[in-house]
Amino acid sequence: MARRGSGQAWWLGVDIGGTRTKLGVVTDDGVVHGSRVAETTHQPFSEIWELILGYAESAIADRGRKGMRGAGVAAPGIVDPRFGVRNLPGKVLGIEDFPLRERLEAALGVPVRCVNDGAAATLAEWRFGAARGCDDVVGLTLGTGLGAGVILGGRMLESRHLAVGNSFGHVTIEVGGRTCLCGNLGCAETLVSANALVGRMREYVARKVPSLITERYEQHPANLSLSALTAALGEGDRVAVEIMDAFRRDLGATVVTAIHAYDPQMVVLAGGPMAAAEHFLPQVQTYVDTYSFRYPKDRIIPVVRAERSDHAGVLGAVARTMQAVDGASSPSAGPRRKQPDPTPDEPQDHSRRRPS
Image (cartoon, rainbow, N blue to C red):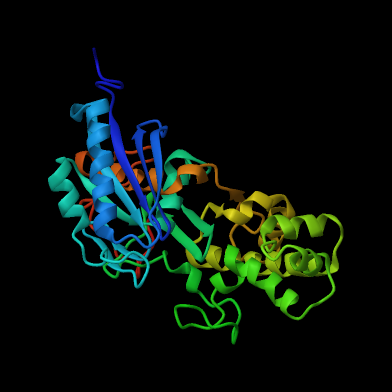
């Protein structure tokens, strides 16, 4: 009896997070098969490594080694695509300086690449989702922090220092603002991340400002959430309106800054707050249309909701390896226009030029 998917090309995708590790088999059309989510909070990387190997062995037994084309790994922190995680203080113990790419290639016998998780989310939309067909894309993920990824000229923006584009959450939006975990003041992620949005609510509650949010928190202390905010907003609560107005403004300013930095065709937003996108996305688009400096002056740069958030890390990790394999086989390979690149898999230094 033939194995399931026997002969069909497939890729292994891994998304390592601070609390969960997600795994899946991805086919060329971007469909994720046999996905698995494992709670890995406080687990050392040695245990996560065994989880990855075990899942890979099961996938190979199920689908056949012959069809396996490669594997990709998404992880937080500063990630070297040809090595693994170079800098990730405190989140996943033991992952820093572990030669992840080398060890996984040795175990599986296929090409492997690693990618920052924010960049992975952008790659997922570029190859399989909302930004398919675009050559220049910025992706922002509103999570516990603010993840980011940048694609220019159809290629992931990378440099010898590894964090180009991925650190966009740490651009200064509010001079003299809150201290960020990175040590900077007024970073975008202190204003527009999911955690920052809940933090705004907590400030009002701590001061006992009369509002539906404060009232419901006192009844149910766990009720500081996006759904609590949108419920209060729907009832016209003044505090909820103030919080959402500030969030719209700061997110708009963040997106405009990204546009001025990278001149994308599209900006894709992902993360938990996008469940309430109808409350802020139209206003963010208006802010961008009003304040972004662009040419032609009437050019619309759409700010859109991500389509592949359900498997963003897994798909983006695979997309990074697909890009490497496409480039190795043919500089013009891939889903978009020809992108000549004599060394397609080496990190590119875009500090002095923009792709032509």
